[in-house]
Structures are given as structure tokens and as C-alpha cells.
Image (tube, rainbow, N blue to C red; front, top):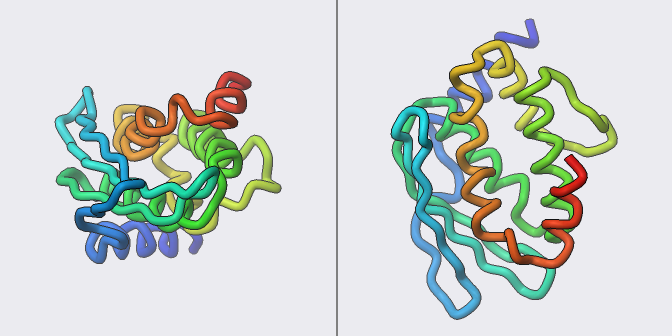
Amino acid sequence: MFQDLYRKVVMDHAKYRRNTGVLDGEQVRKVHYKNPTCGDVITLYIETDGNLVKDVSYEGEGCSISMASSSRMTELIKGNSIDSISKMRNEFEHLIRKGKQQDPAIDLQDAMSLEGVHKLRARHNCALMAWQALDKLLKDEEGYQEIKRQR
């Protein structure tokens, strides 16, 4: 029953992508990232205001998993602090690589719908592509690296 619901959520995000398009402005940073294992691509845009991600969007092409994960990630991080996002990122990677959450107190919302990707080892990077692009954008942000190193 949950697998069917999760599949519907993934397909909904893949078909009706959220937060797509270009962001412009002085506070907007962008990065282009290509999944090294399959060729899926994303350009991620983030507008920050201090420690807060004020807005986020992306453009990309790829499989249903990578596009659904990108869509879901943008919804999850918008309006959150860099510290919170770092915790979510690490928790999501743990979910994909290990098949379960490490800290259930971290609310991944609909991103939990990608939990089944754990069983498809060759698709791990598809689910993690947007988060890996995010790593490139936020690697120098205070609070992001410190938490990420704890993996």
C-alpha cells in the first residue's frame, strides 16, 4: 500500500515539477551539475539571505527519480536555514544509501517517497543528484560543512 502511494508521489513530482526555471538577482547563485553515472543534468539556483535559503529553483533533464528528487528537494529546503538543510541533506543520503532514516526527528516530508531507491543501487546517484549540486553551492557556507563532515 505504501509502495503504491510512494510511487504516485514520485511520479507526480517527476511529471509536475515544482520550482522550475531560472532565478535572477544579486543574491542568486547557480551551479550546473551532471550525474557522473547516467548523464542526467541539473542547473540549480539558490537565493540566500544570510543563513536562510529564500528561494530555490532548477532546470534539468533526466530520469523520473532524478527529476522527482530535484523537485522534492527544492520544496524541502526553501525557507530553511543552511544548518537545517545540511541535516536534511545528510539524512536523505542516509535514507537512500542505507534504506532507513538515521534520525527520524528530521522531517523529510514527501522525500521519504524515494526510500525504495535504496534497493536500486545503480540509481542512488539519480536520487542524490540535486543534493550533490547543492553541496557544490553551499560547500563554503558556515554550518553546512561542519555538519556534513559528521557523516
